[in-house]
Image (cartoon, rainbow, N blue to C red; front, side, top):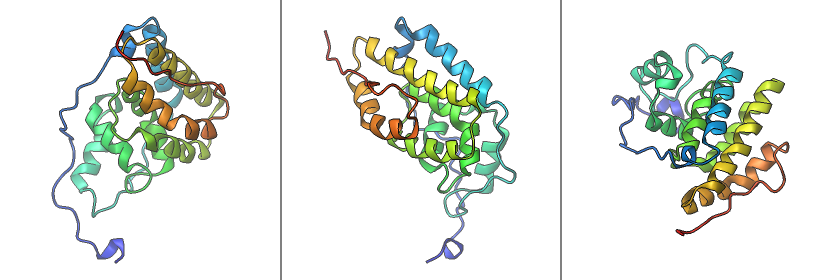
Length: 192
């Protein structure tokens, strides 16, 4: 059955209300200020990116209201739950690889807040986004973010889940970003 044969979605998905709670543990380490600076540099480096108009989406998966919500809500105002859901659909049924570059600063910010439930799709989406052509500043911003993000994870007193989530995706991430240090690993620690 082709996508054209599927029924159009009638129930809006946005705004997403999963009631997920952000975890700001990484920001309470000695790497919190550099992490915030790295996030701000991501926003600055990718501010030239815009969503394509009209936004491409699967009509079976999203409504016109969903597309309108995504395109009219300022990036930083998309909730952690909104971005976590966008990440799961990006490039495949919502937007293009170029559109993912628009979402990227917020996606990585939400990663720092441990707000994704499918962070393992980040490397493949990064690969698609990078293939659209990143500037040196954009590449440097992404690499710098991951370096300080891992440093913050490693500095968290209780980081077992954060370290596991990162280490699960690290091998694929290093394939997409060979500029990352070869030993970039989050060391899981149990409660002390």
